[in-house]
Length: 334
Image (cartoon, rainbow, N blue to C red; front, side, top):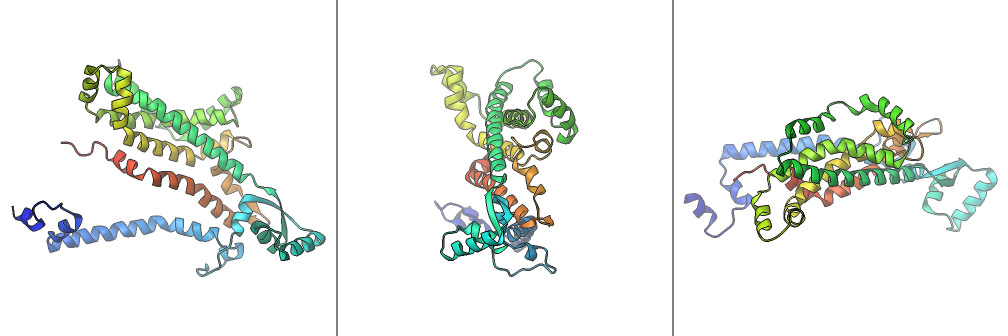
């Protein structure tokens, strides 16, 4: 009763009220844990900070020793990333300077002009980023849809050899991807799936299914069967009960599974490097191969990495509440 009176009858127990009731030793322990979490977060974010800084530097600033902390941000890295350029002839250079003086050149053209270059067209990065969106998006949708039905079947029905089947599904993730790349390359060459979008979508779907099925089965196991039984008594069919009762309850699990599948397909490197060349090549294997005049264009690589990071960060941010609920689903039992 003492604890109840301290907070006040009828008042919710907030985080601040919990902290006020902590003993000095508990407060010290709570503060130390907070400091440790902050330090770990800072260490994890250091590579992101370096990548963002590098993306907005010029090439001399990137390779300078000691590293430059204070600099004037520039979009030179994004120009190198998104465009194809050529050294401008003296006559062309004079024309471009005149056009720039009259304000007829775009921002990227003006930046390229500063290094004596002219933009000849778009680069392949945009196409490869679009390939990443298509392949990762469609494979994620296919994986989640198949996993929803398979996970529900394993959760609700007495499938013969269910444990063996679940173990077999999980065993497909026992080996690293690079181990099976050569057999897949030979098979894809024979089936004419090499360097095709459908081939990569099928491959990522299959590799994501093992994790997705196990996750969805766990989420469906946590949903009481009484909900479906009540729906069946009310006259719903099994399929109607699934779509109207069970699936909405598992929405957080579906979102969490979709995020994990998307991250794997979005970041996958080995298969994309070995099984694609031009048509279906995604962004991960193309970013490290950016070569400039006489060396590696670190600014373009950092800009490409930043552009590749932003879409998946946006998706995770939009689904953050579902993801948090999904990964903790069933952690607290009543």
